[in-house]
Structure formats: structure tokens, C-alpha cells
Amino acid sequence: MIDANYRDKQLSQLQHFFATAKRDSLTALSPDTLAEMRSRIRETINDLLIWGRPHLAATRGIQWPYHECSLIAPHLAKVYCQDTDKKAQQQALLFLALLPVPNQWRWLAKAIDILPDEPEIKLFLTTERQTIQSKLTGRGQSSLKLRHVMQILKSPQLPHEKGVLRIFSLPYLFLDKQLLRKIANNYVFFLEPPMGVVFRHAWWRAFTELEDPCIFGLGGEEDRFFIDMQANTHVIRLAHGDFLPDLAPLDPAPVKDIDIVFNGTFDDMARKRHFFMLELLHDPRLKNKKALFLGRGSQENITAFKKEVERHELTDRVTVLSNLRRQDIPRSLGRCRIGVHLSLYENSCRCIYEYYRANIPCVISSATAGMDMRIFNQKTGRVADDAQLPEIIASMIHQHSSFTPRQWFQNNSGSLHSSRKLNEELMDFFTVNGYLWNSDIVPLDSSGANRYLKKEHYRHFLPEFHQLLSWLQPSMPAGIKLTVDG
Image 1 (cartoon, helix red, strand yellow):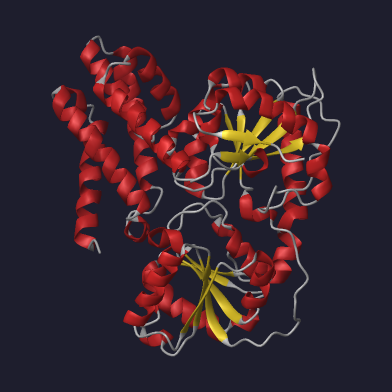
Image 2: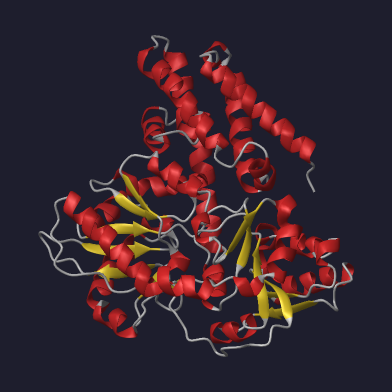
């Protein structure tokens, strides 16, 4: 456990760096010193915006690093554009290319173009390639169905009307520039990053280098702020969990014998913060409260978590249900009074909407990235700093029947409402960009085999899927075979 003093030192280091940059004093330092500084500052920003989020949220605020980077960018851009010293220009460009500043991805493209042999740029690109390769090999599968990566929402009717292509997984399969241009000639991209803190994944920049803007679906404020700062992007609040289809309650008056439900994969417990939830259960305000842990995961990780429950002496208060079929989850949720969500980063996480659909209010940590905090309100739940969680969880358990999250879900969210909102956003986008709009998109689902609300829509788009397959397969990395079933 990293203590608060360490996090405070990180914040002080960043504050000193930002103050130095605002005084235009950076380029007076040696190139080696500046390279070491860039590496340290990048690492610190990454660490704070991932693992240090609770401390950052409770002190400076999550937006602080982004805001400060946006303030130093004009100083650095001035050096790059106006300074006569080539070395100073180069150092300014490297800061602009490697920190989350406005137009970072454009600056990065410029640095890659004119400084291809610069060690920091070479290291950045090498690390990016290694990360992508690790993600691909980590899948453990050589065959990949297109419908598990993308979804056609609207067919192209060329030459005047483009289609809409939703990409929700493995965006790094699309980085070939010639391939991207070919697809973009036929489709507008609707991109849903799987996780929040999007600035870490600069491979998304490839989509912003096209002629048309690409559309990003992002739940979290900080991600919308960062992507809004990048050129050639259009940001909307809808993503993933917003498109959860409605279901009739299995029982209009279920027996509530569990106080808390915590839903998160056991294969990523550090991000989901399972162990923090166990610690919260020891708080005097939550003594004797019972919790249900739901999630998918490997048997090894599930066993490890159960041992942790035993170590905490909570076996009489904690139930673990793993790898349930999706259709069995609502019945388990019906037993619970409130949901608790502690994950460090998401992008419009499905499980929160599942809580609301099941009429379960939810408390979420203010440190969570990738969630639209406006969906937590007097009808649905609360947002709390980590230090406030025991008190607010206890209060919500006591008052759980005063919330009406299912009513809110039916009136404001779910597949039909969110698909309609997305359709309206897309219509406006097409109009602004001079494209005709003669047909609407099909309704979306948040997950499942192909993310279509109706199976016949997938069959309707099969010709377009086969065409995309013919374009995509030649550019795939070795060992990746794409398929279309049907």
C-alpha cells in the first residue's frame, strides 16, 4: 500500500514542473536532464491517474494534471514555433508530443515525422508496439470473429451517404493507414474505448488523422476533456453500458437478504479493488453487513480471492458467485439492497446499469474514471470520496427503499433511449459534415455475441461484414485470422 506522503511528493514534483514550464525555464536545462524529466513526469502522471486516483480525487482533483498540461502547452508551442534555437525547439516538441496536452496526438505525429531517430520517440513507438503485441498474444486465440470487435450500425449508400461503424474492442487492429482510409471512405467511425484514462492509449490517434472527424463515445469527464483537446474528434457521452436492454423484473418484491453487491472481474482485482471492499466491511459502520461478490474469472484468481475472504475472517458475511450465465445475474441481484462500485477506471461500466435495471441504487467512488457521474442522483445513488464510503454505504443500505433507480433507468437509459439519442447525435454529425441521412441506425446492445439488440440486424449486415473482412485480413498481424459467421 503506497502511503499518502508518497502521493503528496508526486503532486509536489508535478507542481514544481508545471511552475517551471510556465516560466519558460525548461529549455535552459540540458537535453539529458530534460529527457529524464519527461520520463519521470510521464510516469508520475500515469501513476497518479491510475493507481493514485483516490488520493488525487481527494486533494487536487482528477482534472488537475490535464488542466495544468493545457496551461503549459502554449508556452511550449511558442518555443517550438518562434525560438531560433533548434535544440530548444526539439525539446519543446518532445514535451508536447509526450504529455497529455491539447493536440498531443498532432504533436506526436509531427515528432515521429521529423525526429524519427530521437531515442525518446523510438522508445515510445517500441513500447507501443510491444503493448499491442502483448494484448494480442494475451488473448490466447488466433481466430477472431469480426462481430466481437465491431458492429455495423448503418449501411453505406455511396457516393453521398456513409455508413456507421462501431468499434468497441481491439482498435489497434485498424492502424494500417491505407486500411483506415478505405474503411473511412465508406463509414463514419463510432469509437468506444474499452477503458477510461484514454490518453494512455495513443494508438487511437490513427483514427484522428482521417479526413472526417471520428466520434468517441466516452462516459468520463476527464476522457471527454482530453479527447476534446485533440484535433478532428467529436465526443458524445454514450458508450457500452448505456445500451443495456431492459428486462422485466423477475420478482416484483424480492427478498432482500444481502446488503451489498460488488460486481467485478476476478482477473483484474487490482483495478476493481476487491480487497478494498473487504477492508470496508471491517468498518464499525458496516459491521454485520453481508456482501455478494459477482464476477467472471479464472479458477486460480477466484480461489485466491476466497482465501483473502478467509484471511479477513469474513466467510460468514461474504458470498462469492463466479462465472454465472448472464441470464442468471438478475436473480442474484434481486437479493441485494445496494451496489458498490470502486473500480479505478471503466468506460460506462455495464454492471452499474444492471443494478439500476434491477432497482438497486449504487454508490460509486469519486476516483472511478470513465463514468458519467450525472447518472448518480437522488433517484439512483451517490458519489463518494473513499474516506466517505463507509458512512454513505451504511446510510444507503438503511434508506435503500427510498431510491427509484429502475424508474430512472426506464425513463433515461437503456438500449432504446440511448440508441435514439445516438441516432440524433449521428444525424447532426452527418448534416454538419455534408452527408445525406436517409436511414437510421439499428438499436444497440451493450454486450453479448454481436451487440445487436435484434439478431436479424446482424444477418442484414452480413454482406458488409464480408466486405470488411476482405479489407481487414490482409493487414492483420501474423497469427490473427478474422472470421465472419453466417
